[in-house]
Structure formats: structure tokens, C-alpha cells
Length: 321
Length: 296
Image 1 (tube, rainbow over the protein chains, first blue to last red):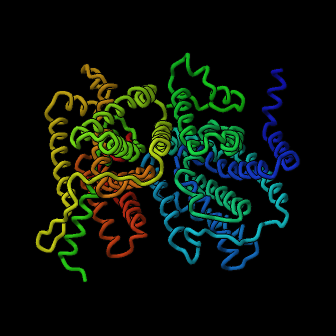
Image 2 (cartoon, chains in turn cyan, green; image 1 turned 90 degrees about the vertical axis):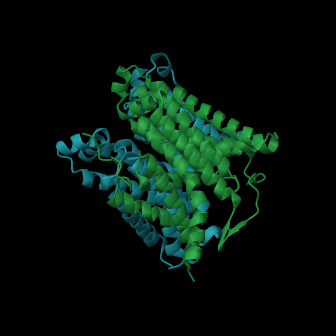
């Protein structure tokens, strides 16, 4: 039994990928759309895992980077008439550049200062999307762009393959020189610098990778919905992505992927919650944080979140100070 | 044509809004000083205060002053409970500050959606207790609530300063803010003092939430917009500085009003963020040069 669990855990990513590849055959059209969104969110959340989980730089502007990727793709196709493939490549490149720019304030700022900067960035992007109507379509939204691949199922398969590759890469980055440098930064920036970590370079790479994945996810989002509106990229969305990272255990790639898929499909399962969805999410997050990180022995050993942690190998960061 | 009278008028209009920003900013600053925790939920606590007032004053028909007092006391007690039940245990077990930060973000979302569920999404407002007769002084037009807001807040700030400087409890609170271990060795209960700081911060945020009503109608998402301005205010003024929060809040209020009137109202918030980013990059301590460099 123990061997079986170990085996399942070692190949968890592969199993998830295979299950996802079967999804189009066993789900209804609407359920399939939810799974598609889950996969697309997971790509974005893996980027956040590098930024928030590995390097400890909290971002509340992630929806804005997603929007940058999605809108750039849409605008390039609709207004400039580029081919979808070229549009996607340029959109990802542009988002990466913008995200790397966000690393500049991170050189000097930490903690709440950095978070407020990312909140500000999120708001700026949202206001620009609303007001630059000739380019972005403003509140009416943007539509009428072609998909990457003509067959919608092909886009899905591409997404699953990309997710698998990104997940494996993220896992490897976590164990690589870069990942260790980022984790050292998270614990103590000065100590990391003393140990020879190039702090600026590490932060820049973390932001760039995270933005690249946000851009990629944004391009896929544009493909899935076929319509973009500023309402899909509010700070509440950023908070939901943050929730996905935290509930995934903040350290674990498998955890992040599972929590993205689960949290994306949760509103469909919990239909009766409809308008109070975020109320429940935030309450769950509050309880999870309180139980998982406060050292009260009797409670924390039995928290459900911890059980998830056991399954996914997450929660190794417990009790760090 | 921009005359000095128009400019003065804009400054006056911005002043009321700026004072509304500066109270939650002050709350953020006080909590930061006491516990090193940056409270992202301050704006939503403000909104909650506004809605509690709406229920007490408008739905239950209580007179203005008792309703005001009850709102502030209730919100203060909520802040005390929040600290005792949630934040202090986390601070005490030396949880990574990043995790607590996420906790305050979660609280912000929780409160916002709680308001949404209880009071609904439609913007609500109640009768302006200060009257809506515009006063004219020379070339200036002045709403009576502007004068009231300025004077109420001025009295509040004087009282707060007296409390923090002149009373034993206030001095104990500042001692905890300065060095927790030393304060603890002097027999000061850290948990109570930090909870008291939360009580004060939430209470003054509620004052802001009550006073905001004549200026803009209450909406559940209002707190997000105000929190963002209050955070900008506190960082521009200097995090941890009493005067900094006030000056920062008023500066943000006046600057955004002038920018909206003279340049473009749609890009008002972008202007504030641009100023904030410039401050963070070139003067991270803010106007009052708070200590931000990391202690090694």
C-alpha cells in the first residue's frame, strides 16, 4: 500500500496529465469548458508558484499580467491582422517584458511595499483597458479574433501538453540552482546575498518566468472564451489565483495544479453558493491559514488542509519563521 | 482659466476626501508600528463601518450621535476580537509575515463579500445629517459636511494624540510598538496592547466609514478603492508615522481632485499610483522618512 502511494505520488503529474487528456471524451460540453479553464488557470498558477511560493514575493496584480497576455493577443489579431501563432508569440514576449519591468521595484522594495506596488499595477492595467477604448474595446470588450488552432479540441490538447511541460519544468526549477537561490531569498535576503546569490538577477528571472506563464495562460484564455472584458481581470480574480497557490501548499507543483483544477470547478459543484462563492473561499482560506500555521498541536495535526498536504507532499514549509 | 479661487475650491473639495483616506491610513500605520503587520483589510473595515451605520441610523432610526458612537464601538470591538482570535496567535508563533499578509487579504475579501451578501450590491445612502445647504464664502462654495468632517477628525486626532502620549495605556502601546520583548519584560501584555491597537485602528476606520456617506454612496466594493488610496497615502506619507498618514491622505485627496478637474478624471487613479511608484523608488521612506531599510 505504502509502495503504491509512493508510486502514485512520484508519477502524480503524469497521471493528472493522462486524466486530463481523457477529459474531452467523458465530460459534457459545459463540464469540458470548466476543465479547460482549470488547465488554463493551472498554467498561470504555476507561474505564481515560482514568484510567491519559491521566492516569497507576494503579488496581487497577477490578473493584470493575465490580461496583458490575453489582450495583446486579441489586439494583435483584431487590429493588426497578425496570424494567431505570431500573435501568441508576441503576446507572451510582451507580457514577459512587462512582468520583468515589474521586477524593478522589487529590487528595492519588499513585503507590503511590493504588494501595494503590484496592486497599483493591477489597477493601472484595468483602468487602461477600460479607457483606451479604440484599442481595447473598453467596457464593451474585445472579440472577433481567431484561435491558435482551428480545432477547439486541439487547443485543449496543446494546453494539457504545455501544462505538463511547464509543471515538470517548474518542479525542476524548484530543485535547481535558481530555485534554491529563490528559496534562500525568501528566507533571508541578506544571508542569500552573502552566500553569493545574485539577488537582482534571481528576482528578475522569477518575475520574468511568472509573467511568461501568465502571458501564455492569457493567450489560452483568449482562445477559450473568444471574448475579453476588463471585468474578468479584477483584483478579486488576482485574489482567487493567490488562493489557488496557497491552498496548493505554496511549495508543491502537484498541489498547485490540483488546487487550480479543484478551485476552478468548485463554483460549478457548489452552485447553491452562487453569489457568496468568494465569501466561502476566503473563509476557507482564513481557517486554513490559522490552523496550518499556528502551532497548536492538537488542531494542526488534524486539519483537512494538512491531509491534502500529506497527499501532495506539500506543507514542507510549515513552521518556517 | 485657472484662478486661485478655483484652485482653492479644488483644494477644499479634495480636503474632505483626503481626510477620509487619512483615517484608514492612520490605522494601517498604527498596526504596522505595533505589530509589523500591514493590514490590507482596513478599507473594507471602513466600508463595514459605513454599512453598520446605515443599518443603525437609517433602518433602525436611531439618532445620529448614538448611532455613530455605537458603530465606532462595535467596529472597535470587532478589531479587538480579530487581533485576539486571529492575528496575535499568528504573530506569536512567528509565522512568516507573508502568510499573515495573505490572511489580511483574505479578510478583505471576506468582509467585502459579507457586505455583498447582507446588504446587496446597489449603492446606498442615507439622509445627510449635516444638511445639504451650500454655503458661500466669498468666491468659494462649501458643503457643511466638509466643515464637520474636518472638525470631527481634528477633535478625534487631538484625543488620539493625548491617549497615545498622555495615558499609561497609550504609553504601554507605544512601548510595545518600539520593542516587544522589552515591553513584555516591563510587565506589559503584548497581546492586549496589539489588540488595543487593532481596536483603535478599526474604530477610526469606522469613523471614516460613517463620515464618507455624504460624499459618496456606499457600495460593497468601495473599500477596495479606498484601501488602495489609503495604502498609497500611508506609503507616500511614510509608513509608521502618525503625521505621515495624515499628510499623505490629505495630499492624495487633494492631488487626485486637482488632477481629475484639470487633466482627466478617468486617469485619476493612475496618476496617484504613478506618484506612489515614484515615491517608492526615489524616497521609499515617504515624506516623513519612515525607517524602511531592512534590519540585519
